[in-house]
Image (cartoon, rainbow, N blue to C red; front, top):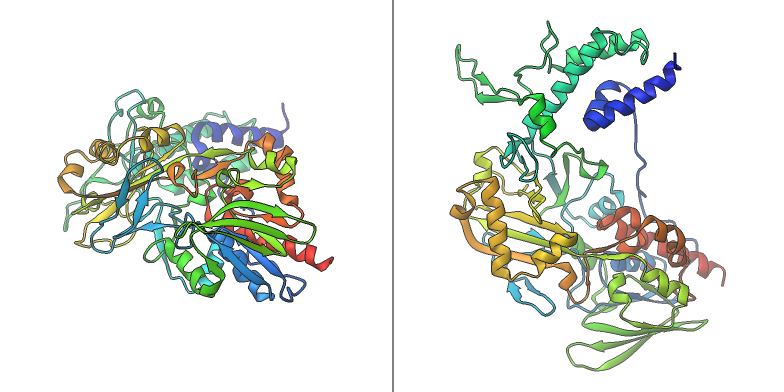
Length: 527
């Protein structure tokens, strides 16, 4: 017989393959596991800047964080930003917001009731301490972002079986999957199938948990209709017990090869968002800096350096005037696809590293509805997951709950090839595709309540972004990324491209800025 310790590990791996994280946690009830946390606060800098000049390229979160922290140490900081406002990709589209695609149409957002769409980052996980640090220190109020609402849906048009093309409540599919696995585990425990995999004491504990979890009948340990799954008719007063909803058969769920993937630590059920839109974080950082350190409408064309300084050439997009800025040091926070188009004297190894990650196209589409019909279906926030191309994540608003003001739904968060397809459509066709997807999920309701207001942003068509983010392969991260961590003579790098583990998240921009300023601090200390 194999070692029982090894067999236990193998058993748990097998359970995970069949039932995912929830099934493993069933078997591991009471066994604590933890994940590594991100950085908690900015690094402690050793030396004072003593008036040394620092030029920051890009006024997004990484650029403003670098400025905030380096000014505390006495550096003379200047930010060059090509657009007319700071924030980079931390944008919330609301009434009056203008979005223009390169070679495409121009949109002006007309959302009613001061509602908005976060066309850039849209949620803050609890583990992203760096983002929360600035929300706290800059007095940016937060509210709950409901990431998992149990009555939001799974919808698959590609799977097979009886559940194809049906909006299935997540609580029903999730509970049924867990319930059937509980029943199978109980059967295995009863017929001796686990005897060579677990000690009898552990088997007894497992069975006790299966009974306590409440998904199985306490007598025959079979999975049946239960309160965790919910009611088809909710109880009334007196002797009316209502009607429990009937579970899907195990075979139906095995045929339904969708919706079984569990979210990672960045996508827990309840996370955070700033009150009034994600751009409130950018506005908070902007308020923390003197207006005089920003040079807006500065389109950078050249970055050159020497042993003792950096020279950056830029064009004022309002006047067309070519100007030069110099500094002792420079932190580039520009998106790599944009930086790669700028003339530099970077070493070949750095140029090669900047070109190594793939530019990731992303499109977001938000549409406003006059009536919150999803709340009639008990959906309050949360994300409906589908396999409709370009509409894999449909996010309902977590603000204005139960209001009469309607709401803006993120009807498309398209990535990879689906974003190219959607982004190449006209604005009218993007909206039509969004309504078509919503009608599949909520038949007869989306078109009925669509008020005609929408906004969409194709990040790969934005002049000063050219991508939603960049994506590093493991090979390039191992072989080429270290050159960027070392930086150039007088140029260091920050921004989302410098945080491969946090692709597309604000925490990546902020922590990369912390890394850069700590590195700069060490360099200055050696002068």
